[in-house]
Each structure stands twice: as structure tokens, then as C-alpha cells.
Image 1 (tube, rainbow, N blue to C red):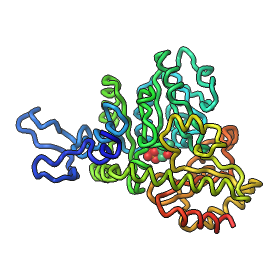
Image 2 (cartoon, rainbow, N blue to C red):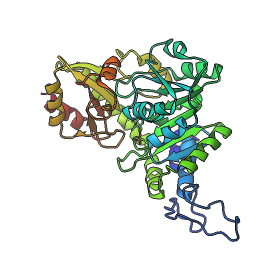
Image 3 (cartoon, rainbow, N blue to C red):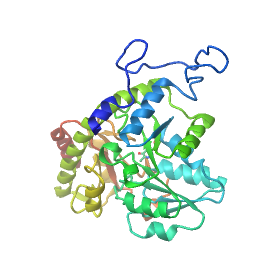
Image 4 (cartoon, helix red, strand yellow):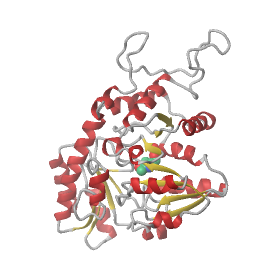
Length: 379
Ligand SMILES: *Cc1c(COP(=O)(O)O)cnc(C)c1O
């Protein structure tokens, strides 16, 4: 099946009792057993829930993986992955990444003895140089947040595989419509389902997709044993969101290309970060690795005056100022004070994240309205 057909049909079957075409919201905590231990495969909703099962199958199909496992948030999914490791184990992560991922690594798991090394994975050779005998996992995020650098997933995953190291890709920014990391050799795909997969800014959820049966069993064990599971209502909302993933992504990408080119030519705009621009250092790799260039665009104003960046963010009308991304509506974020405030200023600066950077999640509105809004806001 092709992507759009899978987005609509994968994992979903008419309800066996009524024929309902939409998977019901099984709002139940427990399931009645015929006799002790004799049941229909469902015992307690932390362990299994039919609405969640349908969603997990759909997500696995979209990422071309065998197993999908959903968690209460993207960070709960990341938390489950990190719980696979033990004191002394080393993890290499990209240095431009979601602020909360950095925070859970440094503030939650480092005190338990895990060792993290952050490197610029968009530069060849940095990962190999950081590998030691203790390296157990490589955490990739591409395109990176918020600088939209592109990391060569196939190259890093091959390097990891050759040394018996697990590779994980945070695929939140691309979504499986644009890239399927398992096909590029990665072991696990992680999603903040909250973003493009849900797509309507109404749910917080995370997911992991993978092929390895044993690893899937371990991660499902953590899902149940630690208990960070999404509720059935949220699973229903994401199942509904997935049905238009291909249509939304197509429009996000078309609109973002137009916005990026318009910003690039504006005299008051300095640097524009968008992998679809030929001037972007990762453009050729992105063209090879992704099916289009995504809906996220970051930029700085010429002169880098903080107050001017703030004025633009305050002036925007169609773009709403707020955290998050990937919803149908356009959003504008100030990473330094919002999504990336948990990364110390010195490390932000080292990674190239300026306090004047503005990040846009380009929505699926009429692009002319988005460009007119940016035009009035930049002035
Ligand atoms: C939002 C986000 C996360 C965290 O997901 P939550 O659902 O907010 O917990 C992780 N990675 C990226 C790239 C994100 O944008």
C-alpha cells in the first residue's frame, strides 16, 4: 500500500461488534474475564487498550516498522528509550536538538550515571570521534530543532550498526511522510505525536516504532511497568489526525517553500534556515534523504537586534506566538525563551542558536495570507 492509503486505512478495521467504520474510543480501565486468566487479550488498560492498539498498528505501518508503542508524550517515549541503559553507558546525541530531550538527558538520566556527549552530527566525522567502548546509543534528530540542520541518517546508522550500537531517530520534524528512518538503517524511530502526526494541536502523545522483536518487548514492558500511557480519547484523536497526514504535509511543505523563499529575498531578513533553499548547507543531503523539505522555517533579522525580533513576533496576526509545531495553524516560536530555555545560554550559543532566532511552523492556511502577515510584521 502507498502512503496516503496507509494513512487512511492502516491498523483500522470495522468494529467487530457493530461494524462502526471508526475505531471506538474504548473508555474503559478493565475488561471482564470469563474465568481467571481467560480473556479476549485485554486485561487492564495500562497494559493494552483496543483504541491504542489500532493507533500503534497505524503508526508502525506509516514508519514501515513492525512494532508501534505509544506513550503519554514524546518525552515519555524518550524516557522509555533511556531506561534501557545502565550507569556507565554512553550516549551520543546531536547538539542541536529539542530542549526537553537535552533536559531529560542532563537533568534526569545523567544523575543516574548515564554519560551523554553532544556533537554536531551535521559535520562528518563528529560521531565516529565520540564513540568509545562504552557507547550504547546514538540519538539523531533531523531536521534539527530549531536550526534545521540535516544529519545523514544512513551514514550514522551504518556506523552504529557496524559497532553494535543502537541508533534512534527523532522523526518529529519530518514525519514519516517525508522520511522513514527504519528504511535508512536506524533501529528505532521516536515521535512527538503531539506535532504533525496528531496535527491539530489538541493532543500530547509520543511513540516509538521499530522492527526488532526483543527490543519491542523490552520497550512495551517499560510502557506497562512505568505506566506513561496515552488515554483512549487521545488515541482516537490521533487516529483521526493521521487520515489527513499526507494532505497536510503536502500543503505544509508547499507553503514553507514559498515562505522561505520570500524571507530569503526580504531586505530586512538576515539568515533563513530551511533545507529546501539551495543555499542551505544540508540541501543536497535533504533532497536525497527526504521526500520534500518540511514545514519548519527559522530566520534571523539583519543586524540581530533582539528588540526588533520581539516586535516582529508581537506584530504577527495569522501566526500565533506559542510553543509547539505541526498543527494546521501557523505558529511562531522564540526558541531561546520557549522550547530551548532549558539549554544553558552558553551551550545554545555554541550550537549557533541566537537569542534573535525566530522559528515558524508554517501551517496549511492560504500562503498569501501567511506572507502578507509576515510582510506587515517585519515592516
Ligand atoms: C515536541 C518535541 C518533543 C517532545 O515531545 P512532547 O510530546 O512535547 O513530549 C521531542 N522532540 C521534538 C523534535 C519535538 O518537537
